[in-house]
Length: 220
Image 1 (cartoon, rainbow, N blue to C red):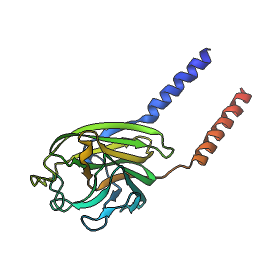
Image 2: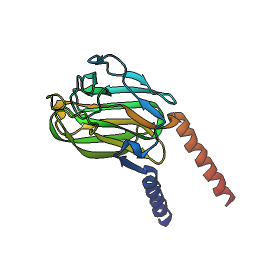
Image 3: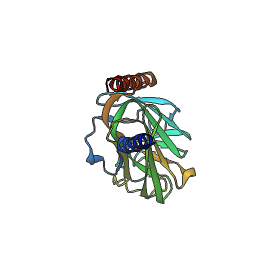
C-alpha cells in the first residue's frame, strides 16, 4: 500500500513538473527563432486548413478557425491597435488554431477583438499527442477596430505561452467575450524547434523505459 501511495505521489510531482507552462505578455521577453506572417492580398479569403511557412528554421503551420478567415492590413482594412502595415489574420469566429510541424518553447502574437471596448483573450496549448498543456486569459482593450477610431499604435495586447519542455505543438487563440464579433492576430513569433513526436515513437520510448525498470528490478 505504501509503495502504491509513493508511486502515485511521484506521478503527481512529475506531472506538475512536466507542465512548466506560463503565460507571456511581451514579445520582447523571448528570442524568436521563427516568425509566421500571412501571405495573400488584403481582403482575400483564407481557406480553413491553409498552410503557411515560417521564416527562420523554417517549418509549416496550419491555420484553422471556427469561422471564416480573411487577410487584412493594419491601418487599412483593419483600423485598430496594431502597427500600420502589419499583415493580420482575421476570423469571424471565436478561435484560430495554429498547428506546427515542429514543437516550440515559446510562441505568441498580438490580438484584438473587432468590437470596441474591453475583451478577454485566451491562449491554449497542446503537445504533439494532443495533450492539453495549459490555458491563460488576458484582458485587453480594443480601440474600435472597424469603426474608424483605431490608433494603429501597436498597443494591441500580446498573449503567448511558454513550456519548459519545449513541447508546444498546437495553440488556440480565442476571444471569450464578444465571441460573435470576431478578432484578429498579427504575426506569430516562435522560439523552437523540435520535430513533433509520433505516437509510435512515444510508445517505444515508454516500452524502453519499462524494460529498463524491469531489468533493474531483477538485479535488485
